[in-house]
Image 1 (tube, rainbow, N blue to C red):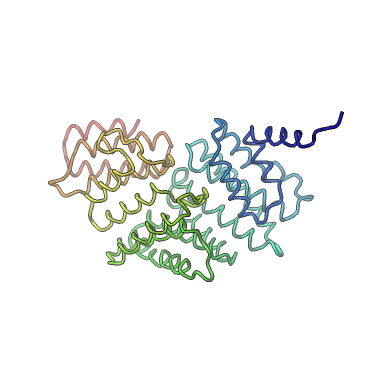
Image 2 (image 1 turned 90 degrees about the vertical axis):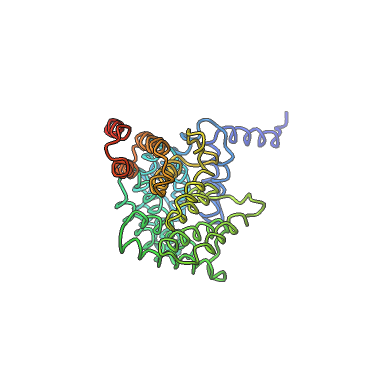
Length: 385
């Protein structure tokens, strides 16, 4: 009886697509035009996945470069680069998850560094360096919650260093934007001086002939520029905010894929607009803007738009500070307390060092505003629990 090869092929594809891990592994080991194309394809599949075991699949892909490490003498630089590119894609998604997922991503990212450093030779040097930049950008992003803001800044600076060495302008744009985010947690001269990095990133994307980036990346860059312009009270702030919105919605039919290593979304676009208004001293508009992302009116503070856990926490914190910095006549003690409680509980759930520190600062501000108020004094127990 003749074998129906067409039916066998169909059955094989069905089995592969039925399991997300197998599907992602199959894509990883299929020759791809570049590691960037590989990351795009993996991200597309992950975004479409509805399988409840997605986290487990991501963890397996993240661990792939380490599982194959023992065969390092038999692997080519190209193979190592593609495996690490796949792992970085998985780590990008894990980094947007809960504490355990962030810890998984963080633990494997450091292991990619020696693999990529060894692969950074000959014709693969620049792409390996660009992936090293991506590695440190992700480490920076996760560090806010696991190690604090100082480490996040250190990793972001390393990300820029590797991006400059890679001579990949698109990678440098991303690294500079990540660095401007890290500088927001510094103070004084350091924070004010960070405008130069935001301006460099914007300059690079405006050199269309030399730097090809998607409209989503352009939008992300303009949000960073707008925030630092607002910090310096520059009138160009509003033009940058307008560019950020225009480029974000310039995606093809609003369906362009946003890779996980690009820290941008519709919610984050609105969030950065709110931060810019807060820097301009317009806390009322900032709070109203944050209310477009989280349900402030009902008091449950649930997300109105899709947001990563860490982003949701950040918006809660920013809304809390905006409420505390409102003019005295507009202050709402009940709202500020409710937001503060939400920040504490969320930060404890993620075990986020940075936002637990922000909650401590928020409590000190409330003590100053409502000194001796029993409602404020009673909050101490929640802070130390």
